[in-house]
Length: 77
Image (cartoon, rainbow, N blue to C red):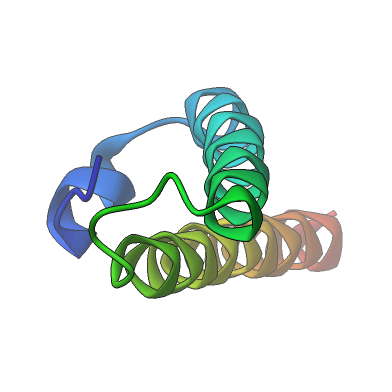
């Protein structure tokens, strides 16, 4: 479930987006289970939210780096 930041940075943008969708679905399922009282570990929702934030941050970083790289290539022409 939780991967280190280094592991996430090694993944491609498509892999990160796939993992982001899975994590969002997992969070939704945990919230629903929590409402019905089926959750034993209430800290799971917090861990999932933090992992989602970690993934979103890395996706944003990768997009920013790609934008900078495109800008440098455009400036060279």
